[in-house]
Image (cartoon, rainbow, N blue to C red):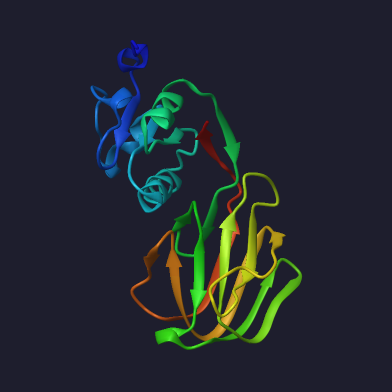
Length: 196
């Protein structure tokens, strides 16, 4: 299958590996993603989140972004149209694309209060909370986790906020280096251009 996109300027690959249809495309480092028209991320969700955070910092949410982990998604990343979807971030500028979790420190329960917009998610003690972006408005959903780590029921909204005695935050599988007392995830004013 010929790939005419290889000849189009502004399309580049970021991440580890490259499925067959992407071979021959230029590769870029994180510092250069804002200079492209379309970025195809080939690594895990954390790499996609890092690219989106870099575009957010550069005020370049007009760059189209695809996530390609196999040959089928790589072909789609080359030809599919992009559409704007909610960008979920936190107060530090970190972005989530798959999920974030709030957990108590060192295996303990999470103590505090969490709200999603005007709805109290919990007030007291829970095993943890999972927050996921949605592809449509209002932008995210959150759920208290069961002792086995399963979501119990979802609440949708624009923002999820937590006040606590101590929380360990995990963003797209990457744990934050230190314990926090507050954490907020919210929909940015502008979404990102997801390809496919």
